[in-house]
Amino acid sequence: MGLLPVESRQIRHIQSKFLDGHDLPRGLVASAVQKSWTRLRESGVKPTDRAIFEIPSSDISHKIEENRKLLTAALPPMEALYRALNAPAWTVLCADLSGLIIRSICDPSRAPAKIAEPLRQGRTIHEAQIGTNAPACVLTEAKPVIVRRSEHFLFDLDIYVCAAAPIFDVSGRLMAVLDATGADIELQENICDQVELTARTIENRMFHQLDDVYLIGFHFMPNFLETPAEGLIAISKLDGSIVGVNHAALRMLCLSYENLLGKSIGLVFATDVLSSRDNPSISYSVAGQLFYCRRYGKHDVRTISPRALKNPPSNNIVHDPSAIDPAIVQAENAGSRAIMNGLPILVRGETGSGKEVLARRLHDSRGGIRPFVAVNCSAIPESLIEAEIFGYADGAFTGARKGGSIGAIEQAHGGTLFLDEIGDASAALQAKLLRVLQEGTLTRVGSRQEIKVEFSVISATHRDLKSMVSEGLFREDLYYRLNGLTLYVPPLRDRSDVAEIVRSILRHRSTSNLEPELSSEAFEALLRYKWPGNIRQLSQALSAARALSSDSAKIELSDFPKDFRDELEADSCCKDSTAKPLASIHAEIIRKTLTENRNNISKTAKALDVSRTTVYKYLRLKH
Image (tube, rainbow, N blue to C red):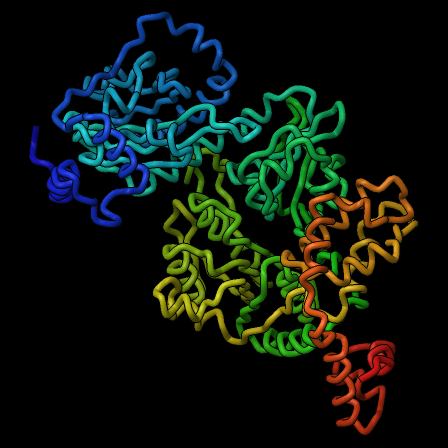
């Protein structure tokens, strides 16, 4: 065996100290690798032990049959991944939960024996037999893992590099692992992303195998439908309950499997998503997020042309003239002037407080028909976010659309790009965004061609970016590129127009001409609550209450879910009765403005950009 790279020799040196009981230096190896080393040390395994790629004594045909549907879904993406690796020293394999390799792809005529023989179908990848390896770590950690050369623990595996990702079933349970292993070869820069995207493609293909379900696909951008980034929800034709959901859906909806499985689709989407069969339609979640949705049918998957779609309308959820708070009015007035003069805007506020709604209103203030493209930097997996923002060329990754696709920035050309949760952007993404903002050009993933773009940018975050800059977590140059003007969206508990927002949500949630009414008890309880989840939590609570109510015309406090009623009661007990009512504070602002305008109601309303009715309403409040 040739000499190991310097880095690998250093790892072996530190490993020997680790085996003598010393701690590993922080960051030397990934957490999953360190845990594996600890397990092996505690079980008495030594780096000099021989790696044994075990062959089960019994026939494995029944195991293959048990995983028939998985393998049917996995084979085409696995073959595509193997072709993309483009070297005979690679093997792509799929192993079940027991560590048995149920499918392996390599070229026997070209692959070296040290990669083809140990990893063929029927072998096992047990940690106890072959030491630390990526697929075994994934079966323990249930998340993507890379293991390089000497990180494998056993000397026998120093020639190998491997990257693995979990494969989950439609209910979110770990069911298998996908792995790419190479021998005497350098680990490609994007190999982990490629493997993870292939695993997501396999998962999505399994959704299309389901019987007796309606399958809903959705995404923030229409050109990412039918890609690994697409959110999928399977709905039972029998009772309308959700029976399957993928990880992309969870990220975009900011929900968990527990929130969705067994629940009605009406608790997720505020608009009909079952009618959008042939072409994607615009739908809103109950939290007010805009999505492009379509319903798939067996043998009915058609290619979608995003160019055929009209510019999406503004989100009407809590986007109502009656829902006006003085702090929001001031932010809108300042933001509208800023965006008209080409200044980038940074919107700060708690999660769910309505930052995107403000961004849309600022965009609309420019007038004309211009694209508004929103990207949530925290809702997209790292392996896909650059493709979603910058676009990608043909064949850029497994599962990509034939011919490639434009990204969010190109879609926003001439309009507004909204970067939500920009504080969650990776260092690599920050660098690429800075380059686009500085030079006005971008390059799609997998391409070298530069494309000119021009757009307004509004960013939003619940984080303190200035503190992140000081801590080295966010680029200072990008911060000043994004922060031409900072606007603040107050949390719902500090707003004076909660009652109007409640009525607005109920009005837009109504499926008939009859707007549901809240009982006085329910209404007062909602007004007293602190709303830690802000408008998003309010919207979801009202949707749940409407779905659970036996009376379509009236919603009682008892119609809200029990856990939410418990929160209302606990919050009411802790409420600080000595705090000054926020409505009184806003009344003081209006009175001050009225005095400055010599008690002229019309001028006061114009100065605050509110109706005269709103001015009169606050003047009726007592000091």
